[in-house]
Length: 173
Image (cartoon, rainbow, N blue to C red; front, side, top):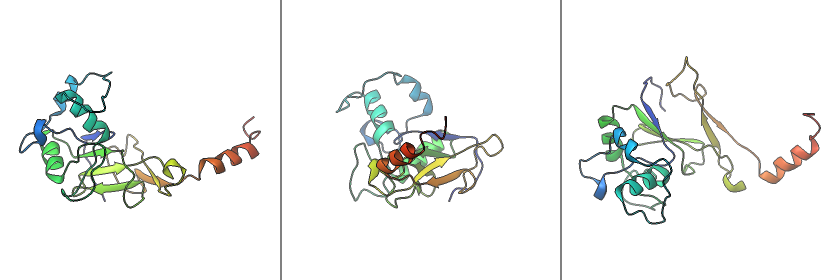
């Protein structure tokens, strides 16, 4: 588990952007993020470098090696994470996309330099996975530790939630 202090964490939805061609030694720097338009439409098949970076930031998932299923985005590997963190002077990256394989709300990748915090418990009402949250206070930021800043939760299916709300609709009035 992560349990250290650093003022430099990057939070993304998906994954880290890779240089054109997937990189062998190259790295996208945080200063390059400024080049990505804030209201870019994401095409189904990105063509430009900036479209590819945005697509990767939204949809890429980590992989430990090049064997196994590929997700919607471009998989990125420990070597990519290590180089990205080093070149951008980061302690780690927090991401959200993808139900963790262990069905937990929080999972660690790439020698604990990358963490997935997947907030949606019982994803789509049927996944039976826990959701996760990272809660920082001024005194704890940016420490990451279970039961201190990282927590897991589970919500029942939406139909059960609707029944509970219907039974108690007057409770807040």
